[in-house]
Length: 136
Image (cartoon, rainbow, N blue to C red; front, side):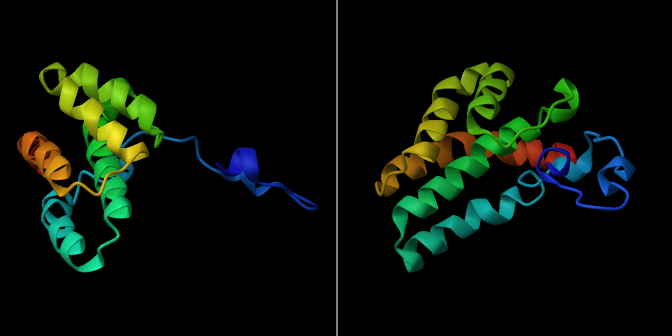
């Protein structure tokens, strides 16, 4: 990001000293704590009441986690929901419908708790399995 957004006014350019970007475990922002946030969202839902924000937050995490499980294999990284969704659907074709629905709810969240629970219920086994794989 710095290479595209940084500006050097005078002196040496610190951007030239940055190492080349690498794909690795430091890229796993959502995969590490899946078990925790898969439980925590329920208490947020019950106490915060900002249902649309919670839905958006949770669905983005779900889609990005599934993408993160594939980043080393595909040697790519993004936080954009669309490519994350495409990679996740290709990697888990049996979950294609639920992944697509999670992506839809990430950009157009709902206050319908049942819709959120359905996605979490359907994908949580895979999410936790991918987290367990990371910890090995």
